Length: 184
Length: 292
Image 1 (cartoon, rainbow over the protein chains, first blue to last red):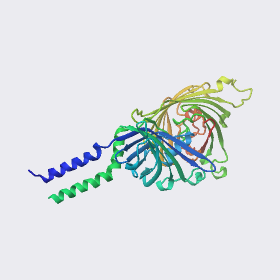
Image 2: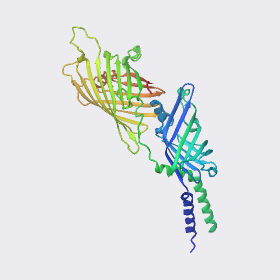
Image 3: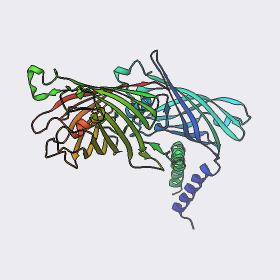
Image 4: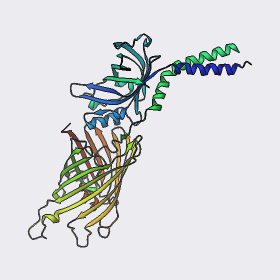
């Protein structure tokens, strides 16, 4: 008995499984994000060691996210202003980066560090922008180690710096990311 | 039919590859719990208008406040609606830890000195171990430093003292609204009139509405649970705005209480809203990170 609808459902199911069943996922809950704003008047930096991330080792696709409120600054007031006035973390609690490591299938798990390019969507303050990030990946001790640094322009993400503190906050923020993803 | 099948399969393929990164993010959300985080910035400053908010200076931070209350608005153009008659309060609060602060202050009004301690007992939190409220304790001892003529009633140091103890029960309801309930207990070692109560209990309510990231409207009201005597004082009612600029917070307000220390604005507010005895004033705070 041939039922075309049943057939297509079967194929659909198969396709759904095929893309996930073979995929080995790697994960972290304690990736490190550090950002730095430098101006002649003031340097501002913050750390977040609670970045979570998933990497699909079959396709090189990934998703990372951080809770904005888990960034720690040197001064309490900086932390308050960061959350209250700049990233508005109540309304936009997370920043995410989703995408794919380019030519992932060509990267050997040989223990060496390899330069890679990741392309994806960077979402912070509720504004998503395409972002291209250069970094390195390394297969070590059964885990993927990822490192990258990139720059984000505040204005691209609709983060407004008022005139009175224009000299204290850089319009372009340097971001460093480091994570070790273990098999799930 | 076969053609339709292929077309459907193709559609599914395209769909899955485009949605996959988003799928990873959904998967990530499903397996990661949001961390438990303390609620910050329930109020912009350590005071709502006159009364303490639940906020304390952070560890190692010196919080310096200059506050003024001018004369009555009803005093007219000659006194520039009270601006010629300023009362001043100067205060230093220091955060020993993130939840414990000590402070000293000096007021023009009755040349009053203050020593205070403020301790966070409970903190509002979000996440898996959420907690709905912040509770902060505030105790202050005040000493009247005015000289008295020798022929007047003896006025030894102990008589100059008064104390206020408060619990600030606060909740950040939303990004916009914060509310506080502030029960206060006032003890005065010496009262001006015979028959006046030495001990008073009040229940205060305060709140803010944050209209912009650096701007909020604040108000507070303190209801007498016990009366001093008769109805000599109308309850303290204040309305104002907070404006934040970098390391400063400007609080501008109108209040019927001219004194800026607790005994004065809780137990002895100078004016009444009904009579228009209102004072314009401001608190200007600045934080200095002394120890990082």
